[in-house]
Length: 194
Image (cartoon, rainbow, N blue to C red; front, side, top):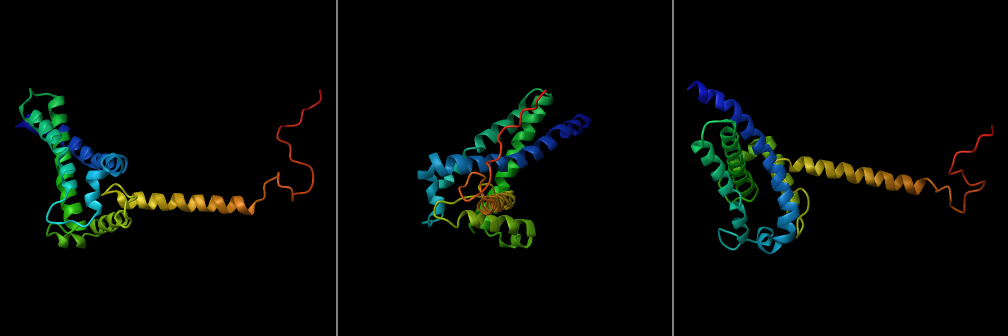
């Protein structure tokens, strides 16, 4: 029993970190793979669904074999840190997968009866951010789910910074514009005489 408790000090933090990192991994796959290379399959998620399932649902099962293999290895392998790390990674992936299905498919897209989760303010914010992704035909940011609202906020700050820079460039004339009078500014420092 004491070794089980000691093992939990390895796999519990690993599970938490992996569950959090999975949203970044999912965002990367979503933006760089689903919306590009696998668009022919993924497009069904951005179209009206006919029936209970969509072709895109097949993509949801890609990580399940990895999570199962890591968890089983963590249950069956010889005791050691590697076993506990594998077990934690498998559990973390599973936690993320279950949370994703409940929030994404259930709360955001209404495919599961979980409307009561909207009372949780954070989950309501997550759902609203993901609806922004579905606002366009081809979708755009945010590609992450649980951190999607932060992705939107970052994109907004970047747009505002770019807009401010563009405004600044327009209001400040270039030193080389013909309308400016006087000598051209030096581009090199003046030579000092010795």
